[in-house]
Amino acid sequence: MALILIVEDNEMNADMLSRRLQRAGYQVLLGTDGQAGVELTRQHRPDLVLMDMSLPVMDGWTATRVIKADASIAHIPVMALTAHAVKGEREKALGAGCDDYDTKPVEWARLSSKIALLLSRNAVAGGAAASGGSSQGGR
Ligand SMILES: [Mg+2]
Image 1 (cartoon, rainbow, N blue to C red):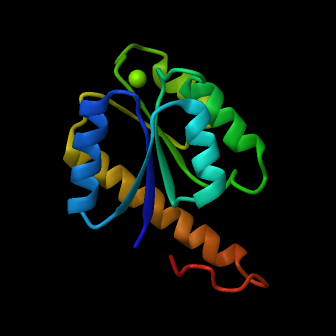
Image 2: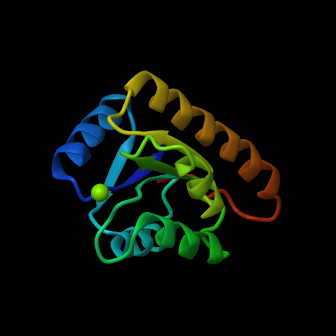
């Protein structure tokens, strides 16, 4: 069962996302600021991070850069979630190292298909790179 880390400081958004992901069969972890998001990613090695960009302590762009600069967790896909459906936001998120991008309010059908795509892409890449590594899929 894939583990998804939600990094979101808005309690209502986090709660809604968390319930939807759990209903879809994912395990969910929650961090409420960017620093916590980085630490939880290091500790738990989630299969995917859903990263809000406007976060206290450390914003989502910085947190993504920190994750992508750490070789032990850089392979974990990060999907940016931003409320600003402004032109340039997507480029800014991808520039920080995010693997994909979606806007809030979340359109669940679209987001869940993007999540499934990122997870399958990484499973394939992980499988190819896993020669030599023991199976650590477990949980
Ligand atoms: Mg926020």
